[in-house]
Length: 343
Image 1 (tube, rainbow, N blue to C red):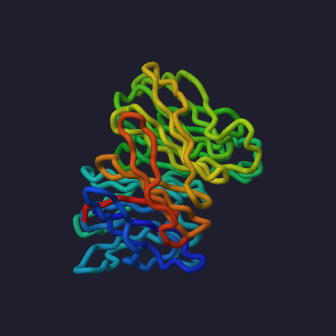
Image 2 (spheres, helix red, strand yellow):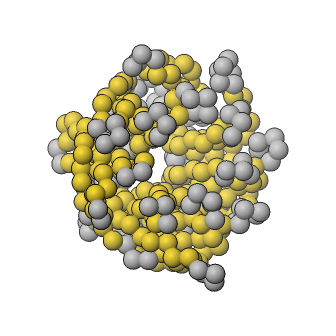
Image 3 (spheres, helix red, strand yellow):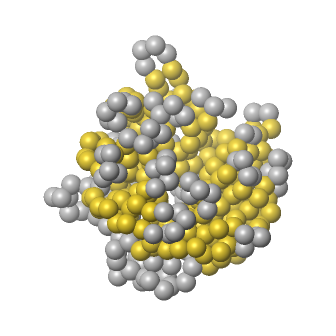
């Protein structure tokens, strides 16, 4: 098992790095980070077998590139680059061979399909408009979709930080039909979303508010019920913070969110009525944790700290949900995306 970490390439980073996971009866550690793909600004990426789909900041152009494993290395097989900024998020459906991207700067959502050898074809796109912009400075310049992926029922969902809104779509004859929208409170800064396994509830992370909003919904009638909202940081923390990644455990018992500023991961337990209870806030032992992830069995968690060029490894208790740090200060430059892989 390995961990892939990519991020910005503004300083020393070359692109995407690979770290081996060393397991034995007594401990688990990550080995030294080695560069495997040289690419500009791979701040988010996905993997399907030998294929890696990554954001590519290629100078005056931005977009996504596909790299295919060949021997011990990777070679670029396809890309979709246009003048301007690159996306902020890439989603994937491996069964349907679909890729979803959200461009924070341009407001554009895109859907691609891909072949077995990694060739991309643009199927559909749409652009968010500035119709419900929030009051914060980060919102007044326009829409900022930060997430675009699938719902439990196979529809599509985006999170728009600028508009404080969750939008739902259906891909129909290579067109994105808008189905419904849920509005977070003004200034929430809607960033990322996860769903309960039964598909009747979602949890939205607000970057600008450092909050999680719990919402019950019906994916047929598109009725929404605002259940509760929780702070991801302590009440007495007054310095700047931005909530970032959010994950839900496979057993639907725990929610995890990273805090950039408070520099922690907050763990919530999920009650039977989908409300949350605070379980833990644990340091990331670095600064600006944009992303974290776990292995397929959810035994280990790795967080990447962008500003301090390090990662931290934890073990995770399936019973309590708590994270225990086991390795700190793992050197990896400018990390913003973490992904476990078996090969």
